[in-house]
Image (tube, one colour):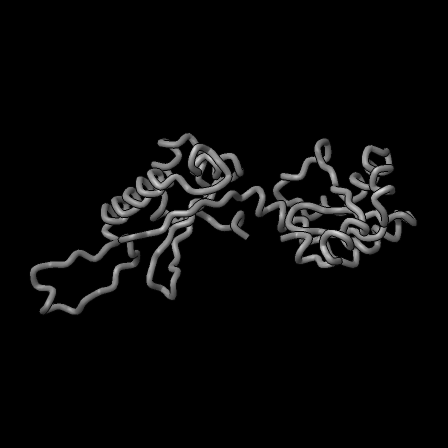
Length: 221
């Protein structure tokens, strides 16, 4: 998990530049290659989603800001060169054994990730399924059809739309949320889930059957 990794010292100059320039906190930078090793990329990891979003066009939820991408890519290349991590071609390159640079910086792809949503996903998905099934049994509610998890969210399914309306703003929903939080807490390693604002989603089997062909893939895609 990313939270247990430490920032590569070779990337610290770039992280410091990003933090100072954009007023964020970079917690990690990951370098790898894509397209069967043809193109390099660097992932810039922040703690929160709003930090990641600030690198999109007009602070939206889609499309990276290409100017910021280029600025970071250029700075990455500069910091790598300054640390002598790119092999320089000399006048006698034909008479010496060629060396492969540790990092390829030309045409590099820059992308961003936020740690908080990843940590929340991992926490929620770490709960053993048998414990979720046990909770459903303990709740002992004849109207409750299923408890389903996807990423960091959890949905309690009633059988009918009418039941869904009845439970939407009920005290029972609050009890279910508290019970599920108790189940989640041992896996909430970084404390991103907070009891005071934690909630569960509600839906119905009727909706699941009629509008998603009783198919989890269609429901969550």
